Amino acid sequence: MKPIAILGGTFDPVHNGHLRVALEASDALSVPVRLLPAHVPPHRPPPVASPAQRVAMLRAALAGQDRVQLDTRELDRAEPSFTFDTLHQMRAEFGAQLPLILLLGADAFAGLPSWHRWRELFDLTHIAVLTRPGHSGSLPAELAAVVAVRRTESAGALHASAAGKVLDLPVTPLEISASVIRAMLARGRDPRWLVPDALLADPGLLDVYSHTR
Ligand code: ATP
Image (tube, rainbow, N blue to C red):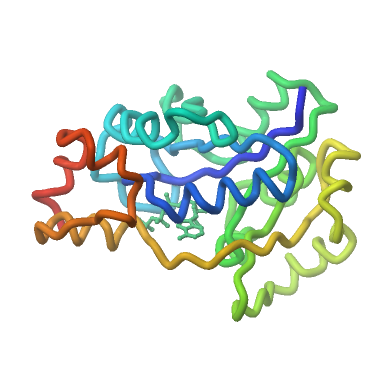
């Protein structure tokens, strides 16, 4: 079995920023990428769309290819979807040897020390940090100290062990965000070309956002 990369988020709704970044990570790391929609994100307000609605949008967006896949395991659980718990569950399923690669935006990575059992995440997964030109990449001291001994420059190193490395992964900067798309839809604006065409082809999929702000 191939190593697996995962990109977690609310996907409320999924948009072309998520999809393009996932595809570029899949190419750069030579792995399939799984999108993991979160049930109850620990640090955020609840999503506007229900789990079933977000899954329907993800399925529509991902149809016809298999390099970026959907993994609904967090939605299948009742408790908050701490990344630590999800990775533990994946380890139990895939075994100790399979490389797992958590994809994190540079901003999210800098905030890692606020995550549940963050130091133990490195025992469970590699981390690929999605960087953008112009972003400083500066890290809090406690994280910088942990990362200093874990950095690698090569994607191949993420295939050679199961967990523990940190790789910077440059991706095309696309300033698309789900919150801006929700605001557009609430004002009756057309989000075409910011979201995959499949979301527009099915008139029901984005309806949930037309009365929200
Ligand atoms: P919101 O605007 O509601 O905060 P979002 O667009 O950031 O939502 P999420 O579902 O929270 O979407 O994002 C899931 C993951 O995808 C996060 O790691 C986030 O950093 C990343 N991501 C989202 N949009 C982009 C983008 N345009 N480019 C790169 N990464 C992105």
